[in-house]
Image (cartoon, rainbow, N blue to C red; front, side):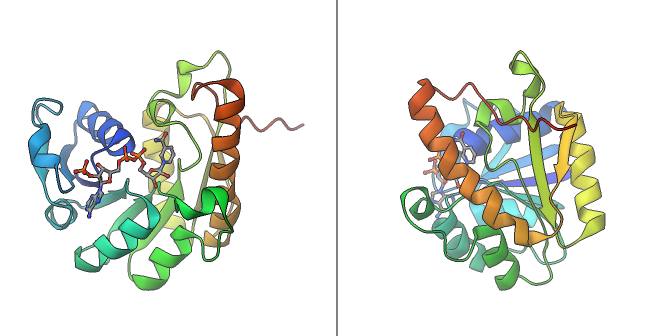
Length: 199
Ligand SMILES: NC(=O)c1ccc[n+]([C@@H]2O[C@H](COP(=O)([O-])OP(=O)(O)OC[C@H]3O[C@@H](n4cnc5c(N)ncnc54)[C@H](OP(=O)(O)O)[C@@H]3O)[C@@H](O)[C@H]2O)c1
């Protein structure tokens, strides 16, 4: 499958490498992506609109306000769009419209699936890197798209995938990212994740 990853930082880079390792044809898109060829052998590099056009699926690995602006010029309609982003402003301030819902409202024909946004980048693609099983959450208004993304999460190594329903769950998922930042400071690093313990 052709995957376009928007943003070539910590998250975009790791997601792009994981999809490439699983055999997909990946393009990373960001302002400086073309300067990063040595970091991403075998991965195509371009602008965000070029990566979006390349992808049958598109992944958002940009900060929220940047994403909303950049996506105005990206061809994502009709595609599965995996939103991993958060608003930087919502880490210390109120979350008004959650990013996942805002992108879906701006691109109603996009098949948006929210997931992975409250998980440390290195664990998104290596969930067995912690000594116990932890949890990934997922939400979408499109049940078929969500089912396809769940299969990709399983291929990434996830087994505890908790379906929170439709995109109204973005508010909870994005507020968990604010909690993640506080916890990271408290425990002194990003090597942790949420685990949902239930009976
Ligand atoms: N880091 C984590 O552990 C983590 C975990 C969960 C969720 N997230 C979320 O994932 C998103 C990305 O986080 P990150 O840590 O990967 O950030 P990052 O390392 O700062 O990377 C941000 C990327 O956005 C790109 N960018 C900036 N302006 C752009 C534009 N106009 N068009 C296209 N790309 C543009 C940058 O491109 P250049 O490099 O070319 O300048 C950079 O590659 C955020 O929403 C964050 O909340 C992060």
